[in-house]
Length: 121
Figure (tube, rainbow, N blue to C red):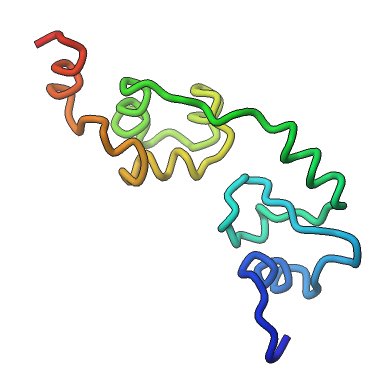
């Protein structure tokens, strides 16, 4: 490894399994987050398996402002797995980003603003 640059996810895989993927295999991100380095989200797969996973995954879920608000404020103590099931969200990263206001930033931060957006002053 010395003197050679490797992508961070490959280093994460190496640290967990003490090896790089076998020849002819690739690392697939189970969480579908390309920058993820969590070794529990990384799986060694063949090139064809990786392509199959990429082409068969569904389009990202588009949440309404009300759903985002609920995730951000009403489900704060709910396990991410449960929120994923309720809103049909594939990745826990999506939930984390909503709760930390990294995504859906346009959604109001309090119920007054939500009611105002809906026209229910």
